Length: 384
Image: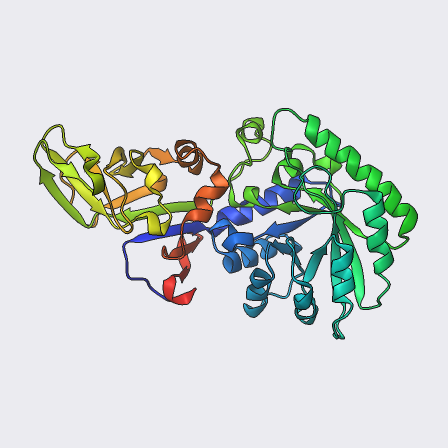
């Protein structure tokens, strides 16, 4: 097994991924399957490892954002269906077809350009409808009809149709309801025109958990698969007991006693008010622990202690309550003793969402994969 050479690491509990997939599977109607969304390196958890665990736990297919992400999964030997949710250049469509990777489309000119390229393999497509997200997708019946007309090439296979909800995780469901209505207007027109069966998928994590009876052939399980609630609204409903998979740890590499009136780190933004124990930790903003997190607590010896002074590129300092030996574990996200720092706590402090926190922890931080309380794999900077 590979090793790493720094005392900072992320632990990913694969058993939690398995639990979350199986819990949603049990919760959904029998007719509805799961796309495991592993874009952005599995929301910072690791795409290959999460994908393999999700597929082994009941997911039928994978979804990513980029063709590059899909090709990485294929290179890793994953043969399951993969859908690219984002826009792919027409010139790269033959490459997707060669690797049996499904692409999203929503532009007439895109189809026209794809048909000009020479390729023998079938290109499997999913049509995106914009029912209120305002990002990408077909918005009118006329646009949809134009796309269906262009599907006159035997190499092009329309397998699915989908949309994405902008506010399924919020308390006010007016916009969600409006999107559902728009989807069904488009669907009625689509069914009058297209006589072949297609796969429908509308649900993200929030919609899947809140409205399982409204889901179609598949749902796209993203943030929930990692054990993180899509929002406080969804968390408070307690529909599924999710298990967080992500924790972040480091160790003290230097401990010193600093006299009263001394400054700590760049800009001298923190000055000791008394003689204080200060610990240095090898984690910084190049690892994704942004400078805005100055002042937030970490866990040492099961107790909360604050980050003091500006966070540096590779290191930060913590005000300790006493002397601790070098090598003492520091937990930034996760449980230590009787206390826990959740991703949501970090997100609130940084004025963002839990999605961004796990995604921003950079490739420099090794990912250690744990299953049945044993380390089963390590990914680090030399293996990315």
